[in-house]
Image 1: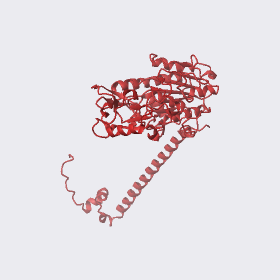
Image 2: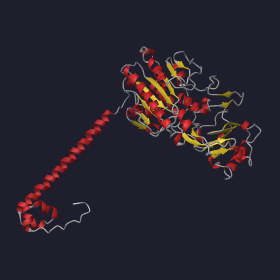
Image 3: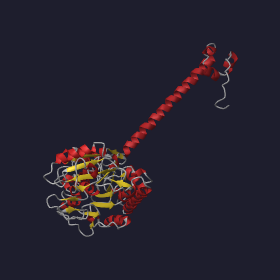
Image 4: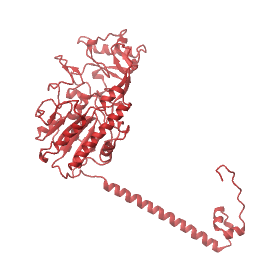
Length: 479
């Protein structure tokens, strides 16, 4: 009978039917039919007791299964840091995948990233970059534990307000680079460090001289595979000569994200390639018998968001309120930074610009807000440096600022926006003896990583903006 067929009426059971079929009687709930038959009463009692017993036993077995499964699971969770089996002391490999937006790990199959997550500790909703969410400020914050206002690299490009000298990403003069990066902290304490590319690593300062064979000068043309091999070669050294801190840097998927935006197949392919490089590293460490001894920290420096030139704000459109000369503007987008002559009122500039932007007469004007830098939200930590221009504009996610209308209609990707914007988040994964397996932790700012590394290596940190107690919330205690 099909599900839509009409149900046939059930005939009322008679005494004869009840006598021959106690099951039918149970289903019809005709208890009167049994009142005069003791054998039927016994059958009901037996069946009822059997059902109750079965239910009770099933519940007991289910409870026992859940209890022992939970106990087994708890027993498998590390309560203390795992002992080293081959290396003589802790080693950290800090890896950066530039522009790896949080969520990219779900774009394609990433078995090696998945393995690190499953057997390590992950920031469940991503790592929070510092503001501005740009490459140089963030990479240097990761290794110094300082906000850009304190480590001096306040943008990818900027001017010294006193000398007028220009900082570019090719500048390795130590006068620009403040704070104490991890490779310097490590060498200060008589230990070895090695860098296979990282922002600031080529700068000679303090005890760090960028030694040959331990400090590789950045060269974008070096294949990713060769970079991984450079790291693996250190583990072929005698145990006491292996550097305790190493950095490894990949430009992707930032390179593709800028060209085509975060949602293009090129980015997906780049993510898969990064995963394969991690697989090569893991395989190499396993062949040397040290994978479980090494602490791997995988991070990005910032995220990425799609942009198109229809999402533009033109400074020239503010002319009815105020004229901003090109010479005042030190960066436009996504961070608008203005340094006017010293005799110009900063508050008046900000007031007139905001008046025009909020007038409704400037295209996309409500997507930009201007500040005197001391009045920026304190969470940005972006005022305590003379290098930071005195007038700062915060642009909404995905919008760009241009001086004049160029009629271009290009689409791509960008970063640098407010670090509270979720698309600017990146990844944090820690794997190794001092990271719990399968653990999820809340998001945190990347200035905390410096103290995390010094805690793993059991060395004294330099002063920084991270919390001294933070490592306790991430790392397993020593046994």
